[in-house]
Amino acid sequence: EAGVVQSPRYKIIEKKQPVAFWCNPISGHNTLYWYRQNLGQGPELLIRYENEEAVDDSQLPKDRFSAERLKGVDSTLKIQPAELGDSAVYLCASSPGTEYNEKLFFGSGTQLSVL
Amino acid sequence: AQTVTQSQPEMSVQEAETVTLSCTYDTSENNYYLFWYKQPPSRQMILVIRQEAYKQQNATENRFSVNFQKAAKSFSLKISDSQLGDTAMYFCAFFNAGKSTFGDGTTLTVKP
Image 1 (cartoon, helix red, strand yellow):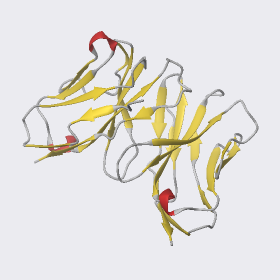
Image 2 (cartoon, rainbow over the protein chains, first blue to last red):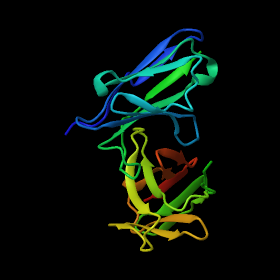
Image 3 (cartoon, rainbow over the protein chains, first blue to last red):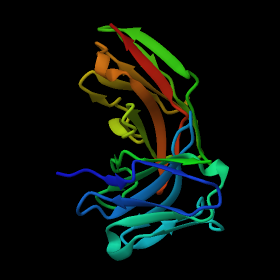
Image 4 (cartoon, each protein chain N blue to C red):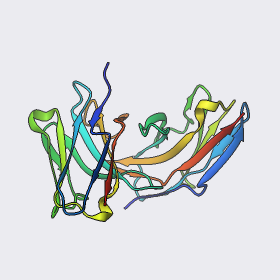
């Protein structure tokens, strides 16, 4: 069974440029999460989808961040424009259902460096 | 809001020995779930063990076990017979009603 696939693995951009991250969850998983992990810290939830609906985006900085999950499968997270403080690892995770006690399956993340 | 505190930024242990990683949390909720995740240099988080708050029995998974003290809001991870492959960052996580909170991690190094 393929795991959660994220791309790109690394991204280096200059500030004020746009950037996008892509996530392909495990087939059949209904719930998809985007997390941001700053250096030396734990992941922080940005947005959670149940199928194609964003059920929790309270921590998503909506002035510059946007996300979508078309047809309840793949998801894209976008930053426009990027700022220096956006440098971090962006992790995608999925789980089979919608119960919050379920195991999360994580991708390997995208490490973003904003210069 | 929930908080999760891991007070040991770094730990080391000799191969084959036992090590315990600490985690405390703060919540007013009664029903929730606690997890330990492992993050090797590959960055992919891997579930180590899971504990339901309503269960008094401590969870175990092979060499990994937890000491869950609900009243004290403590959730420590014990790794027995440590192996070199256990070297990684370990994160304690709290889940409730779709909300997730992770601690800042403990870097564990297993020495040969």
